[in-house]
Image (cartoon, one colour):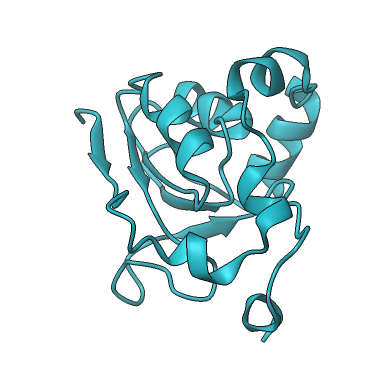
Length: 140
């Protein structure tokens, strides 16, 4: 599957309204975040995919994909699958998008308002998400 991106960075971005200034201004240098943040051990990813019974052709939604630390691993482990990477932070999302992962669609969105129809993915994963400065709606 070809790389596909759907973003909305026109100033009406829901991220701007749902997160505090601290969250919006954090992670402004995604290349450093991506370079120095530890990745996921192969054994841990293997165990996760095995225990969740993820098929090689699975459709996965990753919430809070950031710069794609887990997205890249999933993309390479599931070449006949499809990963939808949901990321609200425009700078992090743009960095992930620039990786041009072949079986990944990068979407702008929040966990409380996922821009997909119901029941279109086989699995939803959230690897590591920071909730700094979230509004109450993020937890409801």
